[in-house]
Image (cartoon, rainbow, N blue to C red; front, side, top):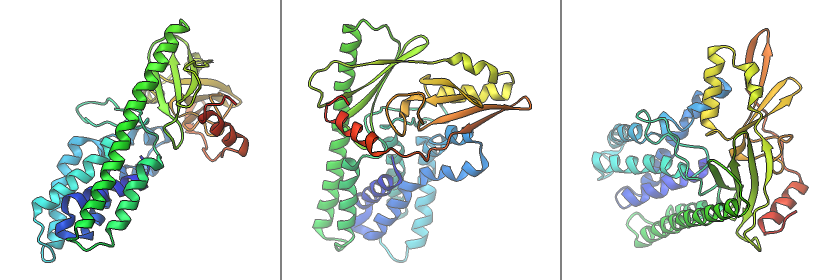
Length: 343
């Protein structure tokens, strides 16, 4: 999830664990604990574009790593505040344990993929029930955290407000799971009705909402892609074909180093990628995250896209610039489709 969501989730968890004993210190340290797993991005200046993407949500989001880190942070903060509060080292340990652990668990509900069991497994967990920025999940936690700061440490209202913030956000997250199950059922019905042969398929919520979902159906050398809205008048999917064009990679996988990078990218995309020729080489697009300025269209700018080029027999892989912004026409089409209208 986005940084703000992880901050307020950590703050709310910190308050629930230790707010009665240490007051706003629990909110502050919980917010810090909720942010720590994402500090792996500080390594990006020292990594290539591909390495930075592949390293994110790995060791820093491991349940194993964070469980080991919690007592160290707990001890350090206990030493810092031991003369000012009645909280024990164990109290601080539990605050950091829950603030740290809830971060990757929430991330696992999104589309990116989180290595919860690193280093024992390199499988990225991605349940894809919620978009990385969803105001309906974040707002209860944000509002609750802001209100809590103005109550006295032992005020019963403080505990009640925080409890309701956690209940509402968690209930919404649970609802997204049931919506996901419904969408998957709709897709399965359509694949059977339309006699579409397929392998794995993905369903993911689109930007900032849980109403409009993208659908990607993998076939042997192509994909069937489309959208489904909870407000659609019927359950019929309109799918279009996107060729994978994996053969374009052959010109860029002659040396072992490049082969390893390409294999890492393909593994990261879970096999849901497509290529297109580019004036300087080939463009590798991760289909799972969609495109910035419109619908599934290989001629547009995908959120995760990589340019393959050759210079003096050396292969360069660079992440494409993601500064393109949707225009008013894109936004209008998006809202129309969300409301169940096909633009």
